[in-house]
Amino acid sequence: MNEKQWKILSNRSVAIDAELQQQLYIEVVLSNILSLRGINSFDNAKNFFRPSLNDLPDPFLMSGMQKAIERIGVALERGEKILVFGDYDVDGTTAVSIVYSYFKKFTSLLEYYIPDRYKEGYGISTASIDYAKDNDFKLIIALDCGIKAVDKIEYANAKQIDFIICDHHLPGEILPNALAVLDPKQTHCQYPYKELSGAGIGFKLIQAFAIKNNHPLEECYNYLDLVVTSIAADIVPLTGENRILAYYGLEKINQSPRPAIKALLNMQNAKSEVNISTLVFGLGPKINAAGRIEHGSKAVEMLVAETDEEAIELAIAINETNSQRKDLDLGTTTEAMNMLEVSMNSNTKKTTVLFNSNWHKGVVGIVASRLIEKYYKPTIILTESDGKVTGSARSVREYDIYNAIEQCSDLLEQFGGHKFAAGLTLKRENVELFMDKFEAIVSANITDDQLIPKIDIDSELDFYEISDKFLRIIKQLAPHGPHNMTPTFLTKQVFDTGWGRIVGTNHLKLELFQQSNPLIRYNAIAYDKGDYIHFFQKKTPMDVVYKIVVNDFKGSSTTQLIIEDLRVS
Image (cartoon, rainbow, N blue to C red; front, side, top):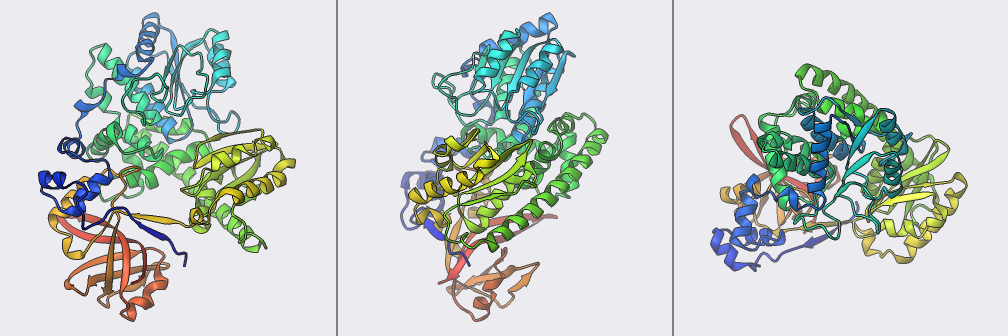
């Protein structure tokens, strides 16, 4: 049983903001939860609980937007061909689907282009620029990529092809010399919200075009189901503008989803209301599978489908591709774990770096994440593709893996990414050298504490505090994501009524109460925690860390505790 550190973020006996507590007529626990999310005034709380599309910032505050809209207008007037280019992941394909579908209403001289993950790799490629030149495209709108494509943009400029870059990644020291660069993270950009997804930037582009040309903004809002799908899959902060976009995007999905999303939801037999988790764990992997196993253009083809029949046919094909991806994922994860089990020194190492030339490039990132869940070490999974060794890196939450990889750059052909995730390419002969150097660098600066998984706990809570009002407010904190995670609580000294049992493979189903209030009972489930059942059978007092879920089904509402961790009191 891996022990996790429990970190309580707020003191339940002290109101962090007593004034907010009084203004909203809420309990101390709730005011502390809001304060932890940066909500420290009545106006903040009003904007948070009542998000409004009227509060979306003016898209023309974004540097380069005016030039971008003018250039698109010129292209439409002249009858120029426009190519909508985007990355092959969920963020890129949803971004392309938004911009392509919107501008298709104004011109038939429009195509989309998704690079081949294996032949072209990430970002703007010379192959795509050559394709544009050969087919007489005068303008390329690049989405979810391009902010560091300095050389590629020079290549396009030499071929007299204009580029509008719509990206959300951190710029390098030199910006590409494109006709317009839209990226709120540019140092000189005055746009007030910096954390949009790639599809979010694409949405701002069509919003600006609608404003400039006096078109109804409601037409732009029809694409918020795609925007929220990108927000969920790309794990951007659920704050500010993203919260507004996600709130109304989920509303659209639950009320009138586009044919593709409806088809995918029906396929997974989704009965309850769609939330961010549904998109992260349900729809996102299916959409991603196209680019991982086949080609990302298949995802766009499905997302822009205008009829249910077309969407269903394409969704079935993508679902089959996702099934292949899951088989590859499971098989590769099992092989990787077996490699670690037979390795004599894997337990003493501070890193996990594995190489197998037969592993599929499309799943190595997923496998790295799986291994971190079990072993909790900075992890890199490598395979071989087109004569090069390529891989994906994932990190534990407090360690900068990109910095460690950067210190091994003398052994790498190329690499990129950020603090917690990265990609890299190297020569076969350098694999062993890289493994040794990476292990040495990480071992020298990672702390033992950083190698212990942690659970952030919003507050301690007694069962009697879980009132109907409390549950209503907790529910209104959604949608959840980074910087607004689902609240996690700690309740001490709990017991099972005797109803507890193991279900499924090794899941623990319980009916919990505290000795101080035995009449207040909550159904709870602890996934993969069946080993703890004997503590409950012996009536050992337990402390549990959990999230609260309210299940609405056929007009009735039940409250369930999803246990994250537990230990003897």
